Image (cartoon, rainbow, N blue to C red):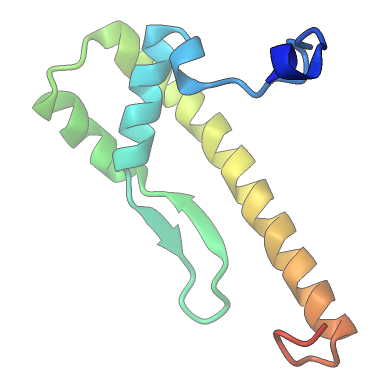
Length: 107
């Protein structure tokens, strides 16, 4: 695309792809993806990933100790970013609903 536009790519603006990450981080992300998300029933609030399944995944996939420790360190950080993103989206949606008179879908 940059070639077509005659511009130079700005690597600082390019999103990071999963394949660009260290293999250990890719592995942690794959375990994170397998964990079920927990939601509060009445309010729909995101409670985070259910980490109780993590030891089962470690045993099932014969994960070495280094990756296990890395998972326990990184997964809560990833989950925190996800929780903040979901909260921001819910907040934005509720603001949009208030602007449209409380009726979803109104411009």
